[in-house]
Image (tube, rainbow, N blue to C red; front, side):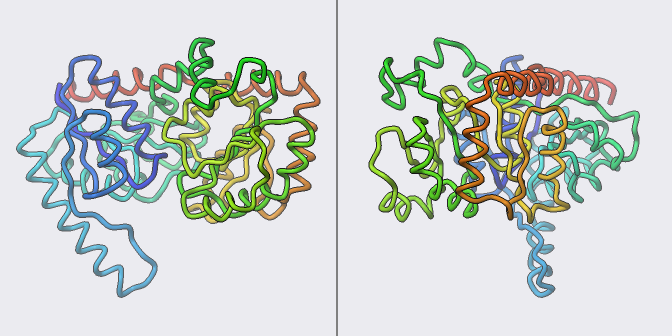
Length: 367
């Protein structure tokens, strides 16, 4: 089978698309990934060895003058996508979100090619809701999203696909590899480890709370792996305590290593990250991004907190003192941590990529 896959802008859209692409490639299918030019997705996709084709695309700004240019760019992108897709002649087109998905899947639908979308969040975005009107299938991560889509008979609850390297991160042999990556000697591998991440760009409120809690966390005997974002790294590095148990990084491309050695995580509530911690059974402290569209991160976090897989805290309530209290309370309560691990595992869907691939085969065959 030939498949077009599109998803871009952030890792939350790109990594699930890559997981689906990996599954289809393993089945012998030919993949063409479509995204924006000189984009994050182009860099990552080529690193995974997939063919990539770029189209014009733009997010829709709130400024009316800018919206005209945005619509023109996306219209141009749709025309570019139509030609690329017609030449490639795929059996199916799959979108995982991000503004580039709209022109790509719209072009495929105009060519009567079966399309399917994967919605990562508990509250779906406007683009996916519109694309779903003509899509042959909609795959969901969270069941609460189902009510927002038409054609209920086309809904498939698959969970969110994660890359094979993430799944492997739970193995003991992989953990040894991760400890070696961070240069953590065997004698120090039992130190409780807190992974802090605000996503690829970092998160100011999380960074500020983490910095304020550094001394308390280190005094309590914990290790910290903090991914603070590229723009904040140098300023934080200059102020951070000099302690080998504090591993401060701008970004971690090999996120699987950070997840492998962590006993607890502090993070935003992006769906892709949540799928990864669920697969690994990693307890989390979730601080939903308060300005996410339709507050979808709060909806995501609620699913995890209701399953007792995570502690949820509002962004405005987060500070160094509160963070230290929560971390100490959790690390001092192994029974609670075990319960959170079990809750996370209940939300995991390790077969998500395979299930999505099966849906793709089904709609391609039925067309």
